[in-house]
Amino acid sequence: YVPVARPKELGDAILKAFSKTALTGKIRIAREGINCTAAGDVDTIDAFVAYMTSIKELGLEDKCGDDDFWKRELGCAHAFATLSVRVVDEIVPFGARELDPNTVSEECVDALTPEAWHAALKQMQTLGVNSGTSLLDVRNFYESRI
Image (cartoon, rainbow, N blue to C red; front, top):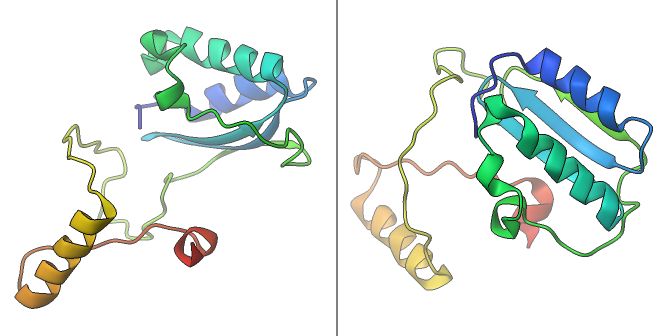
């Protein structure tokens, strides 16, 4: 999540820069950030990362070589038929307009091991519905099956 002041302009610029390249994938842009899954050969992905990190507004200059940030994986460069870039109201649609999608939390939390996650869920179950804690599962169907 990085604030994007002009999502449409960014989307148009990405399409202009990469629509005639080997880059494929789905890029969703909203005011609160970008969700991107891209595929292509190594050179094309390198060019895309360099392009995105060159956009000063995004503040990603120090992320160019950060594979943990970009989550590069070897795989099929043909996972997507085309490059789709869309501007959306929300990256993760809550469908609740009372939530301000432009509010980005800078709060950091520790990652949990599967065992610690299970223990936390058990604790929530023990505390019941009045625990003051809510769990929002944002996995898609495929992720939840795994």
